[in-house]
Length: 231
Image 1 (spheres, helix red, strand yellow):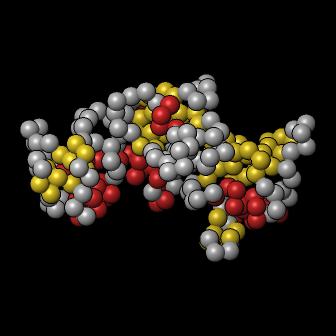
Image 2 (image 1 turned 60 degrees about the vertical axis):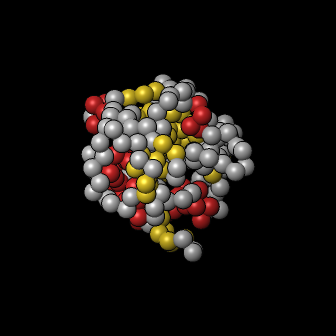
Image 3 (image 1 turned 90 degrees about the vertical axis):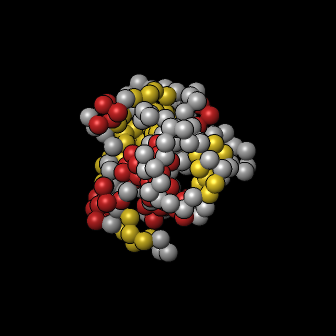
């Protein structure tokens, strides 16, 4: 199997990312650094990434987890905060597909296949992501149309979204349905802040056609590639 494909199946990143690891000398085969992208990895070889032996997994795994508030999505954290990956009990090396920030909740995908993650995250594929958002104030029809067409955020760029009002609740706040086809850093919160309307709660309920359904906060479910490809 070609080296970058093998590395992606070990769950360390997409093939493009794995090419960078090879280029930077992070990969060893049988104890020797290799810079050969086309190296044909055999079953008898042992492969290392940053001196750690990799475990190859033939099958592709995808996990849906309902992220609770107070967890981070990254695989390590120098501040010692709670990590979402620690809630998933599996010996398979997984990594997250995208992120939600510390105080946000909802659907996050984890996989061991870097190519799947890359496909879901690449902007050109316009993967649909859906959120429930609670804010203190109401956006006007004019504001909603501006957001749909895209607003320019100073020192950041143009952001757009499809926003529709769901309800006004008893706490004098407003619940919105927000749909994105891209996902820049703090995308939704930047949009609402632009209108001096800070987000109080943010919850992702759908990603790439996959829905949380009845998965409780802090719980997860493994789905098959067949289930994934239906979406």
